Image (tube, rainbow over all chains, first blue to last red; front, top):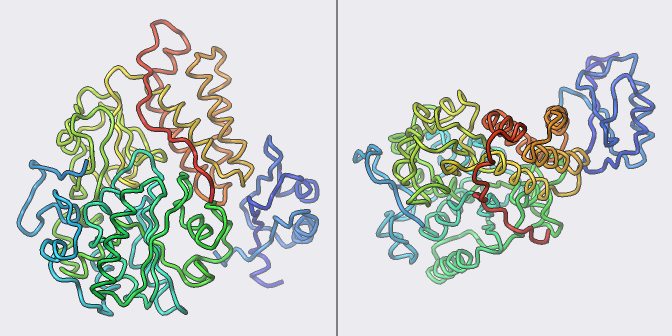
Length: 74
Length: 426
């Protein structure tokens, strides 16, 4: 896999997020919920073997508040 | 309210103050030209000059102005936004400057616009500052009649909200939305007002640009320190016999500025530096602190927007901090969960500390929540509020214990800092 893929990170748009919590269910390796139900994202890059989980969580977010992006971008 | 600092602040001929803030308002174009000298001719080297001057933004973040200018320069039809919204209740310097030297700010707006290739600029002033808006409108009308500018400049009266002056919030409002921060996937320098590259600079910053365009970078550096060059406006409020807006050289001692404003550094329990996102400096630590990034950083503080509030002797700092924390919670934009729920929770725990809640649970909750809200908003409102509360917990440690034990009566809890009622978002 490419270097870019290995440097993938998850980002939440905090305005779009309304605390459905689906992401934490689908990607508990990197996402937990705070006491109000909003996701706390582990800032470490997502390793390749977890990328599929990350993408599933992104796709399942009802408000499209979650994204996976290349960490090098910012 | 607008006054300048008398000696003992050093005043050499080259570094004479005031630079920006005349002691008597300079409002007509003729008075302005007589006081500040002829308007600078447009020159393409201005961004380089601003870089050489080392000018840092005076709105609070202190970002290098030349970097921001470069980011929009050469973009397609850029726009300049002069930010004079001043939602910070402890600050009055932007309004004082606009009121005392409107043409200097407008010279800076025009010079910055010309330097980055913008043909349009917008001066934003908060709606409640009716008198200031009138002064700026009048100055603009005079410039139009005299045909001094090739840039189209207009004034917009913005909503009176704390976060409305945040750059993305301001741009969102100018684009017809609520004055609330946005989650920006692209930078405002690429896509701002009307989708065009947008430079948002504080009005004081732009006034400095006007003077750098006139006198150059070397002149600018005649006052200030090597890493924080130039002068800056500060607003002194609270326990001071001469509160108001002062122009000081960066690097001046905090004690000197307090002395000039008639505040007693030896008697104050603490001063709040940097406004409501700022840091308390205990009275015992004031000696030796100078108003520059390095010195303030050593006591965990930052210059911010230059708002300095002096807590009166005997006043309960904890109660004051709780009141400000409550106000900051009310000023969240209702957009991001951690801020929306975290700040009211933090404010309630601060109230519990003031009430002397005996278990210590409130402090534990506070530590957790302060960690939870930081970096989890679309803007830095939760981070700023958390920094203020953390500083309050550190500096008013003794008060927390006194309140808990109730071993002696609660000191004076008269409110000090203003907590204006929230206005509409549009």
